Image 1 (cartoon, rainbow, N blue to C red):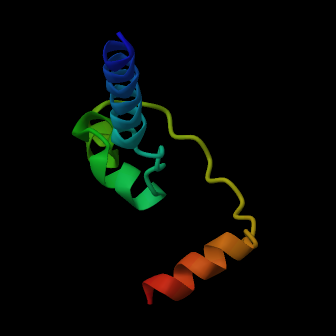
Image 2: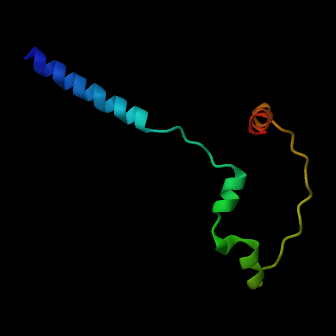
Image 3: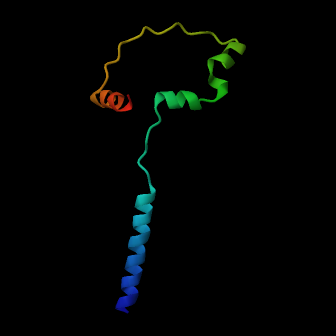
Length: 77
């Protein structure tokens, strides 16, 4: 009986561990990756064919890098 309980518990623990290890942390795609993956229908070339009214360009605002962003840049180069 004790052997059966031990086997049952070890089976449950094994399945839970497999489930935990299977999941990967949610990595968010970079802006560049998202641009590449964007469907062709939403690109500028596709918009030119339709007569959509263009919005005026937004004024650019300088974006200060975060510490994580600087670190990531240092690692990539």
